[in-house]
Picture 1: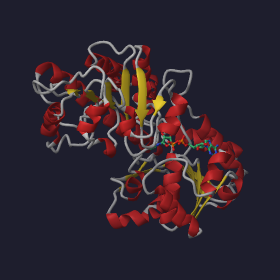
Picture 2 (picture 1 turned 60 degrees about the horizontal axis):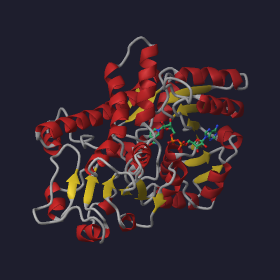
Picture 3 (picture 1 turned 60 degrees about the vertical axis):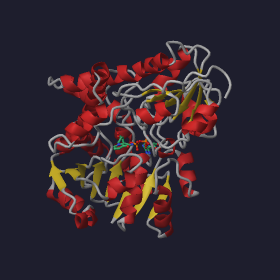
Length: 452
Ligand SMILES: NC(=O)c1ccc[n+]([C@@H]2O[C@H](COP(=O)([O-])OP(=O)(O)OC[C@H]3O[C@@H](n4cnc5c(N)ncnc54)[C@H](O)[C@@H]3O)[C@@H](O)[C@H]2O)c1
């Protein structure tokens, strides 16, 4: 089986590499020549655990290659996947910009030689598959047979390979029996794990993806608001989350209170869904509220840090650990840090930051931040330490060393990775999310004004 993957970003590169691992011959196409050149040198354009080895092994085996030329691989492919970006349109009310999808569809159409299944993997609003069908029909050579299918991707950055290889389900939207059979065959390697393959209409597959992301974003936002209520009432959000999460109808996942969701999918997909629902005359009021609450939350987090600094960060040094929207990725798209850090700077703070993988991208997006070589480097003379992303290496800091480096022993843990008693016992004023603050024991000097 031969596959052409159009778009070699997070989704295209991971899916392409995983399909080649199934034994198929995959050509990943991207119109970003620098990205293709670096892939051809064995350098990954993104940080994703396990990806470099997976790519190297399959390139070596002759099953995986990279090119900027779309026509060749498409003309030889049994299936062409569209995995280009669908960002929020710049000037609009949140709808998805489908320019890249339609441009790719038009280019694909011109190169089709015989029957091919064109599969949209990008997250696209309901109805896009039909439009892709029309675009291809208008540009393909007369008499060429093709089918359009939808196969939304549910992988999570940071665990993308495992998610692709062992998904909870595969969703396939296709109309003709020929396309349905082709896609069932394509995913046959997953039958060993008894992965459910749901075969639906194009529209149902497209909406399933948005509904899944909107539901997960709602779950996160729900627990974040419960965390606020915990703070006002003396309850503990971690215990509430456990108490509800053990209920099989609710489930444990996505119940970690934090600074608000970010990333390359939830913010844009919730916006696009809200927009489409309004247009369709079936507004999604819950998702509208989720979008608004989440956006406000990211900005409110700066206030929480300022409060922890006794209401004033002017001229103060703030050490920030973690910049990416979650650990194990270098993706900075819509990361909470991009809202929180400028707000702190606006209040006069000086920010030093460290992230294990996100700094090259963060440098392009954040101004006047001192990027440091290690977590401990950020803390020198800091007045407040903020944990923004729960990378493993931040989970077991040497708290005595941290306190010794800082000017004021104040910690704001927006991911609840420490226990309040433990941090307070080490002499810190500690603020987290949805739990009661903890003060250092009497006699310990949390605010050490000057000196290490
Ligand atoms: N990132 C995720 O975790 C994730 C998960 C599930 C679904 N998705 C969806 O998958 C799609 C892709 O997301 P991504 O994060 O991989 O995007 P990305 O921006 O990382 O990658 C898109 C790539 O497509 C390339 N491209 C654009 N137009 C092209 C064309 N005409 N020909 C060849 N290449 C072209 C770009 O150069 C870029 O490298 C989006 O719709 C997204 O919502 C993303």
